[in-house]
Image 1 (spheres, one colour):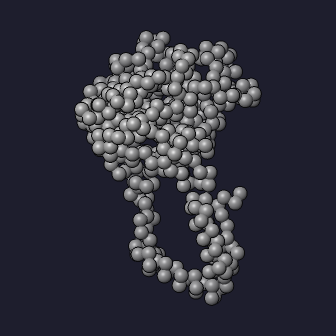
Image 2: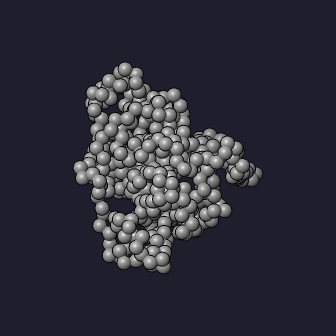
Image 3: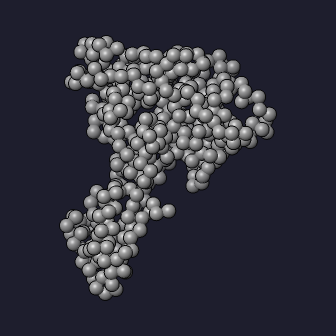
Length: 272
Length: 135
């Protein structure tokens, strides 16, 4: 892997390689460049996952022509496909180096520490939704019971926006979750269940089931299950499996002109 | 293009969550939680997630200003500190040292907190020192 990345940098196939390097025992994302080729020896596959493709979109926003190499697991690859579809990255400028995926029901061997289920406490099992339950089991709850259980989970929300911020396929400049008329401001928990449902609806045909949102949620809300459910509906209705190909999703932008009024920008108040 | 990742500690409260700043061409573009940090284990609150915003904010105060006739006038540090010292002296002479209190913060370091209480006790001469994290 390291030799291949080195060769790519030397040949000029890529300008920057996004991988991981261990710094003070913390595996952290790291940019390997042609100028410091010897550092490629330190390139590692980290057990901790960061959204490298989201970082790549930030880099492409600064310089659209920069050629980026990325270390990818399956989830990163799916996210890249979605980002290609939505024109956030140009596939011609991206080179990927695939590594083993996280352990899951499909793949037993993996390099990733996440997706090893945490122990869920008895109270959460009794009144909430167990994060590691398969979707089919959660769908079995009766209407009222299911609603109560999900509301228990949502009311814990501290509105940190972590799920949105870490999401590799969230790139909108204006986010509905910050729109005062959709989600009222100034109270905790935020407007539930609207806050979470707005996000869930926007995840339809976008969520690539990487689990980073749930990983980042300080309140352990089973977000992954929620978005799996929305994607299941997309699958049933449109036969579209998000992230598996760089093929346009059924949720393309309608028409060429957007008639929605942009959110008015509030001028900042300065008292003096 | 220069892109680097700078590990740091969130400055908002005393918890000490590990954060990672994403710096592209010398500008902080995003803050990420450090996944392997023992304190926050890859999670952050809303303040931590937005650490980079105040660094780049155009409203950020970059130099001291002194309120004169109801308006803030920008000045340099020497003058600001001299003015503050003069006013402190006046107040202490008129009302005594206990008329002044010092509020310190969890956002600053342990050493700075120590210096602030030392300043309150030794320079001003009061025990009126308090801290936002003294819950």
